[in-house]
Image (cartoon, rainbow, N blue to C red):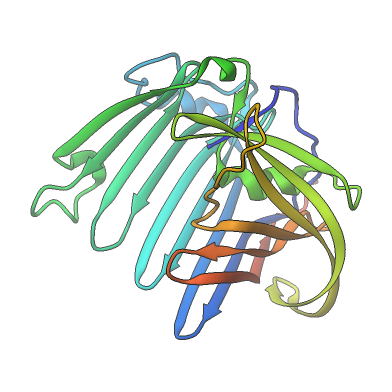
Length: 281
């Protein structure tokens, strides 16, 4: 979960894509990641959500919200995350995460002003095919924010393709700061533009295949403990270690996502397909 330093409006670079599909290969294993954006959803959706079981839920500041859906597949296991985000300031409103593998699991997080209200559901025997709302094993937990987080705007790691894409990167040494809430602590994450890289790309667009060399901006994600210099681990799409993105600053799109996965080692998710947003009239 990511905390933005303030609730100021985000830079509004125009995102021209609605879905990006990535693939990583290593030895005999293949991992896939899909990112889908649904922008300009009506903010009235939030009014129909169940109330948080504790705390005052964060609601959209404007008339619209953005839905970000992440789906990852690795070794026969699939997970899907749906994040509802306030596009005006990057605040996370609600996150739903479902494990679609052999051990079904569903988490529904409501972001409140004082902390995160988490509902976790698991099926009883014979309930695996039912909707998670019908599962019989339900646990509730409220994770309160520490006192030094009360003025921060809270987002989520699932929002990174959206937040980094919307930032108008000027080139190397440009940076963007976030704060994440992890295991009860605040961790500072600095996204820093390192260098331009001439990179071979090979992915499909609605207009056809794009193959060749493109100039991409390398963005590194560096975590440190909030208020200290101690480094901290982050988890981004299941990645850890030296997490980096190569950004196409014209399309405002991550073309490569690099990091490491437990028992899998260093991986490189390469863009394989994008769907473009319809042109605005």
